[in-house]
Length: 231
View 1 (cartoon, rainbow, N blue to C red):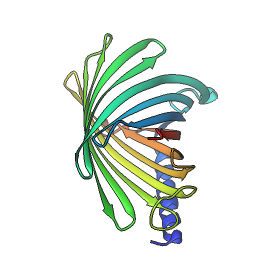
View 2: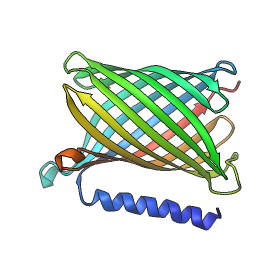
View 3: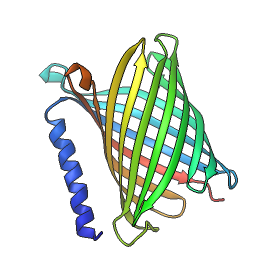
View 4: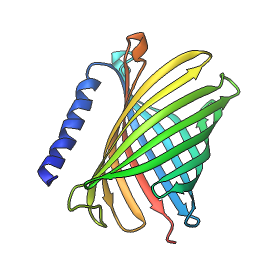
């Protein structure tokens, strides 16, 4: 796949996301995160992540106050992964969600396996999680994510090179016997700074509540910094 086709693919995805955004109730904001990954040995690795949400737009409010900054929440998570095959691993972890007026906890279970199609690196993630709170009933979720990483020059992503990463995820949830569905589409442009650091900038789009015929759309400008240990 040549560079022109890759750039065209990025433009089509971004344009499609903006078209859907214009036809739904919309909220928008910033979603910065820091990921630290440490390889313990050939079998085990740990990941620590800090992420926070900040709203700057909400068209469900009066027109005079659509643009207004509001801090939403912060997530702190710790995950432990173990290889179970050449290109697969199981992951267990816990997440703490800190909101202005509440704290909740989430247990996480994941199975991840990777494949390669030409110069595409494709990853599949099947996950379940359970969110516990003193103020709400437990939320149970089942999710599937498909990710593709495409180098924008050459046949693989090297240091000081850009890449395109596309994630799409279907998320099912149950709380008090009520079913919810959310679809996430996240195109990212990444840059490998060196062997330990890379950064990604993208547009995280979330479409929710299809079943009640009232689509709600949330868009995040995501800024992700990835750091891994030197060993």
